[in-house]
Image 1: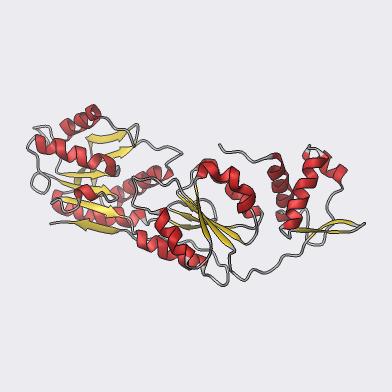
Image 2 (image 1 turned 60 degrees about the vertical axis):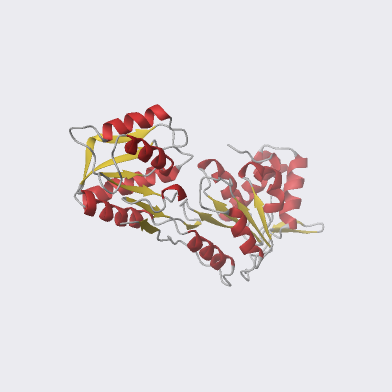
Length: 339
């Protein structure tokens, strides 16, 4: 987990006291001695933390009288700078560079890798800035809470955490439309291939729960010996895929409908099936969550494609808000298939 510096932690504690009402606008802050006892830190660290909060306008000093909590100022909705934080993963259709360029038309924007947040934290953590997180994981929650406490607006793309502003995919609607297509061609008994849920990829568990809820509501049946949960989403070996293919297409009860929420496995799985003489569109139909160009136009395969243009539009809408209101919206994906 990424850690904060001692000065950042002190600032966080002061801001938490302000947020919780222990320190109210106009209240005098603790003396340096009280600070040192309360936060168990040195006077030098306290001085630096107070100086930074004063520079942000959160507190102010009166010569000879002490330091006080400032009155809150109304925001005009404009940001001085936007930081787009993304892993730049080439396996997804999301293009942080393209989004950053679009944001740049309206406000200064910088791209930042999650591993570089600590290096840039002092620049980012200034009221008037905004942060857009692309698929943050749980290890970044402490940083997110800290930024919120110093007055930095934040929007999360592809995730939902607490009451932060968010714009994720409406996975349930996409899966429902896909399952209606799949069962319309292959019947209500289906095979299911997924990945083991991990804290780094919270969307896996979310999609699994949505899938099983829809199975119940749509009165579908997952075939017990055709349910597969892979241990590693991004590193599924040849032998593991071969084992799955053998189970899917055994001679006694071959699968007719397959739902696969790990799109990385789709192409090798279909290639192995074809090597056995099992063709998509003729012998089976497959639903895949997410889009992979290599399967575009393949008969008998439908892909739940996330609407990246919709995400970009919502990000720009959020940035250009004149009066800040919570944005809790989901983007409907598209179902792409060839009959």
